[in-house]
Amino acid sequence: MRYNPIEPPDPAVWRGLDAQERLILIEDFHRRAGDEAQSPQLHAVVHATVEDQVAAGEAIVCKTLARLQNEGLDRHEAIHAIGSIMTNHLYAALKSKAEPGNLHDAYLADVETLTADRWRAEAAGNLDDQDRNDPLGDGADPGPLSAAELAQLGAFLAGIKSGDSLTLEGLDGFFCALIAGPELVLPNEYLPVVWGGSTPGDGVFADAGEASTILQLMMRHWNAIIAELETYSVYEMLLGEPGERGLVGRAWARGFMRGVAMRRASWRELFTDQNEGQLLTIPLVAGEIDPDFPPEPLPAEKVEQLVLWMGAGLGRAYRHFTKRRRTAAPDYAAARTVRRDGRKVGRNDPCPCGSGKKFKRCCGAEGAPTSP
Image (tube, rainbow, N blue to C red; front, side, top):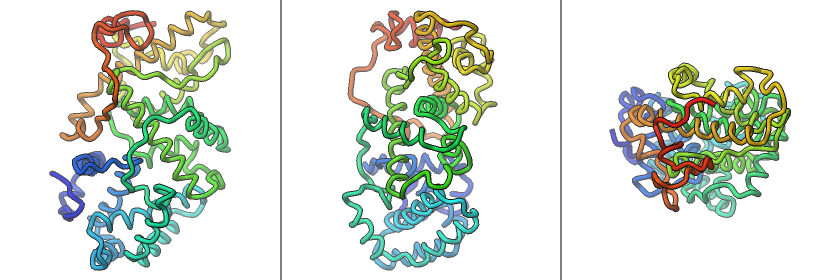
């Protein structure tokens, strides 16, 4: 099936697809059309949700979609318009403790009063504030986060009043596990883990503009991780200062394991493989194998070795599950590949992980060192 939002998909066929296949079809359409959304995942999720409501026969959404087209929008624009209402209510939900049913009713009431003129006016009014009300906008991804943007995201996460929310280092590890893993995990499932609860809590976001900014920063960081892994097969982890007994990367490792926990059964084959000792460094550093690890302060060279093994374990996991991710749906590779300028690491080049070995003898080898 090839998806084109101008032509309504057959409801039975659309509903017969799983969630991952729908997202891939939508992302593939925008890739083929040359539309690179600033937040590709958020774009696809909102877009798919509107199509899901139409396929399910949600009366108000179907009626509004038809009316917007009669008012001069094409079907793709009409989906964007409804999606902008959905996003506004999503941001409100992130700040509110209202019951889900009430939120859905409010969303439908807003959709029912939506007009093409109103959407055009709101879109025109937001040209200087990209995606504030319409994250389905088609701006180009500005690339990896700058140091200032990482600090902004880190400060926001640190300000969440939940003892179980993720720090910036933990978010980096969490995203790495979700990206490297064998199955797609959607934002509506993993975002509550970031916030440390079912919602980020009352008053976390100052306004819808801040919510949009933070979500965009997160999606850009997600895409930057993919770009690094696709281009170099390794990723330079975001690690903080040494912690207790000189250990580095505990928050990252714990974030990674929280990502693994979302699809633990699918990861089991890799964690029980005796040839994947590097990957086991991650739960070791996280304290899941031995809560008292390390029993005594670690010398700097041992800390560096553990960090290298964690990075190598991530890279090997990403490569190990590549085939499964791509065979989950035919267009997966095309939809998710991220191109990046820069020379790809040659097999005889020094390994980017910093081990001093050639890439083909280290992270690029199927027979890389397997136990810490």
